[in-house]
Length: 234
Length: 270
Image 1 (cartoon, rainbow over the protein chains, first blue to last red):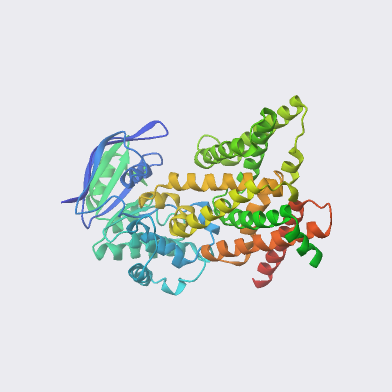
Image 2: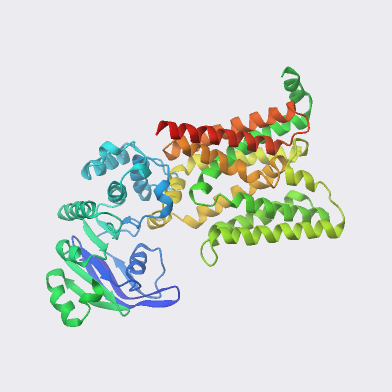
């Protein structure tokens, strides 16, 4: 059964329609890379999946026992976060907030899950460091650890390597791939189609308010060249 | 010094000013951390101008000042925090609303020909704190402490990353509204002591000073409250020592000295 199913989803950005009646399904354990030109609706779609933006039409169905607030989300970093006085531990721990009631106090179980997430991403030695004193790659790993704490099943990543240098970006993609190998479903927006084709199982190429391509990444290049959207996607 | 301490216990207005000042200092500092981190440092300044306009209106119309100022400033705070950055950039929106409110206030006072106690609202006064103000300050401080303690982790999550917080199901707008209302009450009550022109410094300085030295949200929040209390006490006693010095200005200058000191300490440590 699909972990997420989109049925005729229609969405707008600032009054303009960017996605029109999109229907796709994503299965548990899939690694889907969402690509497309600026303004093609990638981030709008992700915000729709997360419930941050209302749909104009259609519906999103969550399967496999997944609840909407149990998605691990890695947003693009804001300018504000870059000098935010927070320890790595504080940031990672905030990923557990979705498991808490109105009085969100963290217990031993939460601490253990956070410690495990930091160990998995090899940032446990940074636990007491200040977030804004870390390198870009380390900061992204901290935000990824927070996302893992929020969900064991599904991660939605909005351009996780966009602000990183080549080495840090490759390391980030490897970490994401490792999580996928452990069974995590991944939906990732990326501008880097080459990298997407290297790592992802499926590619969703958005453009002209629809899915120009949705299928296996190994078949994407031939179809993209044939369909005339390969260069645009790059 | 012993004369000053005796005076505090002898004169009710001084003990009220001390209690209210301490409570408002803690509230302003704690809420200030959120505002500074959300890049809304100027909101305190804007709200104080709006409060001045509302108080002028109340004074001219013969209404109780706080009954007009509190709802007006709370509504403005919600508007600024929720709408800022959507149609008009946050700082521009603050400038538009606060400038307009200040202009309306000045026009009303000029038209009515009464200056009432507007001077004390502009530059603050130790003598302006009523028993009613003290009761409200106690209630406000309790609300801020309760909200901050019980919702601390959610407040951190929202302040650090609103999108992530929304994705986890937190009602971000509700929390922003709660914070906005608390800020509004802090500004209205704090204006009596600090003055409309300087209340924002009570909100902004302690957070900025704490951020020079401390690197976790918890440490910044606690130390901002401590810095604010120290600045208030120093400013309060300086006011009493140098008769005629405005309290708000003294507290702000102490805050400035602490900020400069901690900024130097940060540079030296690096």
